Length: 124
View (cartoon, helix red, strand yellow):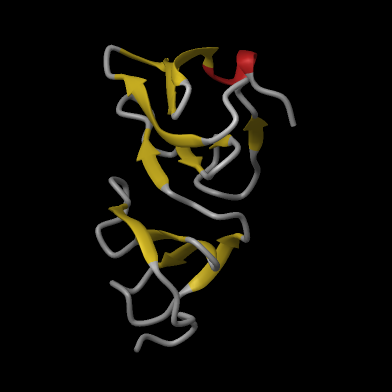
């Protein structure tokens, strides 16, 4: 087991497109974890349940995450966050428009929800 990594379920794993040694892992109980040494050690970035992680294709320092009830955007690779709670009760996933990553769509048990344009549609 890697240093700093609790023994919990990993829901998603993503490589950082700007740093080949950095990896982000989302989990049910440990939240968002980050490793900057290819997984040898980990530190917690956020405590929320994380089911989905995505990097902005046009600005890879922008990191999007989703948990059960919210989608969050970090414009600075996890140092600060904007939180968006769509009207859906339970989020299952989300997608960014590849041609315009400011356009966000959330998937939930209740259907697909367009969530607007990036930070202008979010609140802290």
